[in-house]
Image 1 (cartoon, rainbow, N blue to C red):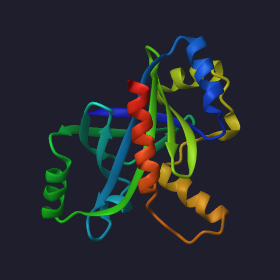
Image 2: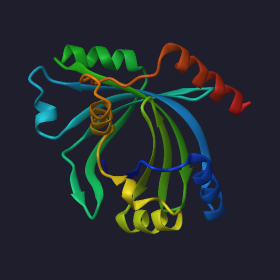
Image 3: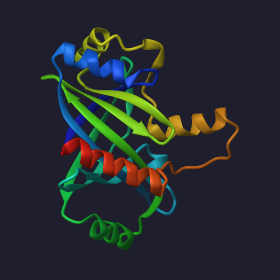
Image 4: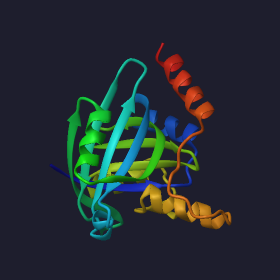
Length: 202
């Protein structure tokens, strides 16, 4: 069980930010591919009460990890999103999915991202590429987030506590696209991403 505190920044150049991260002494832990599914009961009770149930597979060139996560209702505190998170590693995502189905849960949406992780002693900075945007996310305590955001020169006008699902909905609305919940890469994009991750690791 942990308390998640995070803030996103949407108007950043990844190449420039990587240089600033290195200069600030952050350690790059590499990148991986993520496949996520959000589950809910038939009546949408989890979403209605601000909870989120997620099954995630993280893929590196040489291994995978599967996680089941329950996030409780979020609060906006000092420009950061705070919520309690309960997470457990599972051996097999497909078996966990069958368990969830057997309990009456169904998949409500799917999303994918490429996540590049940088770490300071007191917080984590991730560079996320989703199919519709590139987003920086800082996770730590509020004081550390404020301090490192200023040090890295992150644009305060692009700061948000919105979820990726909210950002995706706004992106579609701004372009006059019909409503859609899922945001995943095309099979060709996914293949290229995984090949690039393998090449970077070799």
